[in-house]
Each structure stands twice: as structure tokens, then as C-alpha cells.
Length: 94
Image (cartoon, rainbow, N blue to C red; front, side, top):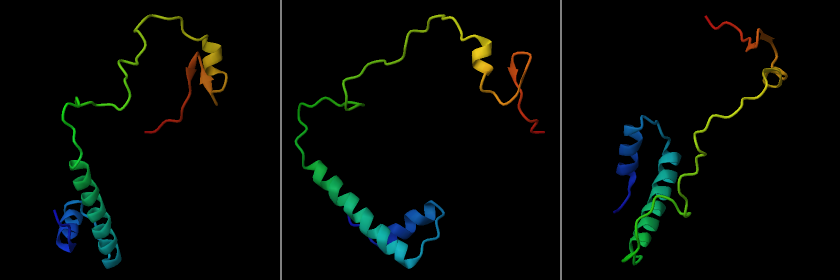
């Protein structure tokens, strides 16, 4: 697929970007490089390779959802700029 000025202007229009002529030229070159690289990737033989969603062999990395003891409220609030009755005090926004 060839990327030219017309395609860059179309993408910029879709993204509602106002590009200068220098930016159009720069993006045209960058997009052409990306397409060239993607074409090169298509040359790879991926026969027999299972699709994956992650490059590392990882499964669920979340901890178990178990009830644990909370931190003491004094420790939680010790660095708070202001607190009152065991709660953070923040400025009113309305």
C-alpha cells in the first residue's frame, strides 16, 4: 500500500488535525516506513505458531480476593495534610 500526501491529509482530517506542509511531509515518510515494516512482517512464516495476547507466558497475575486486615487508621492518615474523625479532609469543589 502506498502512502502519499492525500492519505496523510485524509487521516489528519479524520483526526481533526491541522498539519503544516512540513508535518505532512514528515508524517508521509513515517507512515511509509511503518507500512514498509508491516509488509516485511507479513513475509514471516508464522505457520504453526499459536496466536498470543502477551509475549510472556503469564496467566492471571491478580492476587486472590481474600479478606485481609486493613492498615491502622493512624498509619493511613499520618501523611495526610488534613484529617478529621478518621477521614481525609479535602477542599470543597462546588
